[in-house]
Length: 112
Image (tube, rainbow, N blue to C red; front, top):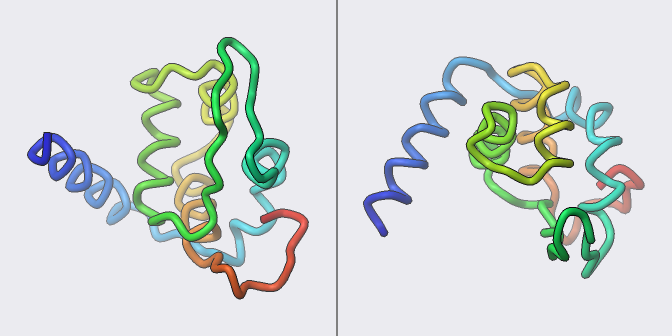
């Protein structure tokens, strides 16, 4: 299990090296994310009841890699897959950097 996690992180890191993300650019790209990820304890009910994680403060490479996995169909949530399909590699890197920069002390931002 640990080996699989390590290999996944290496893959995310390799992708992150190709495109440099910008938190500032990402701020204008997270409008689709906030509808679910900005609501504490939100549960999506399509196709199954699913607890939506808060992603502020998450590792940028992990977010970008997760979005890429949704886009490739390696992750199966239909809403996330549809959203990720509309994103470029640059968009994914920017969104990852934006959310990685968020902390509990970050100013209130309606796009958080």
